[in-house]
Image 1: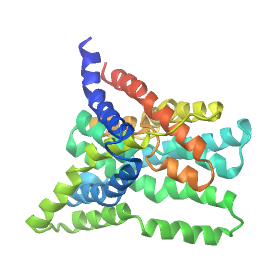
Image 2: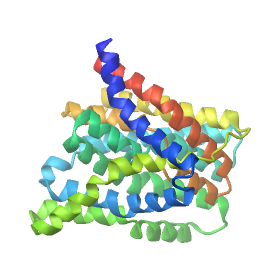
Image 3: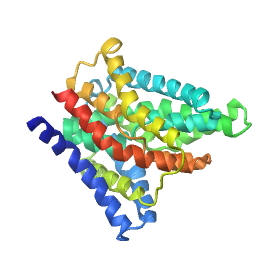
Image 4: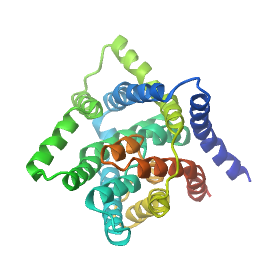
Length: 314
C-alpha cells in the first residue's frame, strides 16, 4: 500500500498540473492561442536554457553517457521500424501517414512531461542529464529521420532537397544550439559570469511547471475521430511496446551503470508523444489522427506510467 501511495505521490502532481492547464483553458482564463505562446516560450527559451545549464555546469565526463545514448537510439529506431511496417502492412497506410504514425509511437515528450516526472522521481541532476541526452538523440536522429520519411511521401522532391530541408530545420532549432554551446562549455571548462549564469538558471527553472500547464491547455478542443484502430495502435506502441523494447535493450545489449539513468531511460520511453506531434501531423494533413492520439495517449499515460513505476520500485 505504501508503495502505491508513493507512486501516486510522484505521478499525481504531474497530472494535476496538466489538469490545471486544461481547466483554466476550458473555462476561458487562458485561450488556446495563449497556450501556443507559452509553448513557444518553453520550446525556444526555457528548455534551451535548461539544456545549456545542464551541460555547461558539469564536467563533460559526467554528462556524456554513450551507453545511455546507444540504448535510447537503438530502442527508438527499433520502435520506428516496427511502427512503419505495422502502419504500411497491417493498417494499409501510405508513407507519409506511416511516418506520422511512427512519430507517435517512438517520439516521447521528453521535455514537457518526461523532465518534470524525472525531476520529481530522480532529482534535478539525473533529470537534467537524461533530458539533454534524450534531446540529442531525438533532435539529431529520430525526428529528422521521420520528417524526411514524411516529406518524401508528401512531395516528389529529390532526396538531396529533402536532406537540405531537414538540415535547415536542425540549424533553426534553438535546442540544438543550446546543447552545442553547453557541450562547448563542458569540454573547455568555461563558466558564465555569475549574473548571466543565474539568469539562465531562472529561465531554466520555468520549464517544468509551464510545460505541463501547456500540455493540459493544448488538450482543450481535441476530439476523438473515427480512427480507432490507428489511435489504439499508437497508444499501445508508445506507452507499452516502446518501454518493453528499452527494457530488452538494457537487459541484453547496453549496460548503464547509473541505476538512476537506467530508470530514466525506462521512464522516458513510457512518456506520451512529443508536444508538437499534433502540429506536425497537421502539417501533413493528418490533424485528426494526431489530435485524437495525443489526447488518448496523454490520458492513458497516467495509468501506464504509474504501473511502470510500481514495477520498477517493487
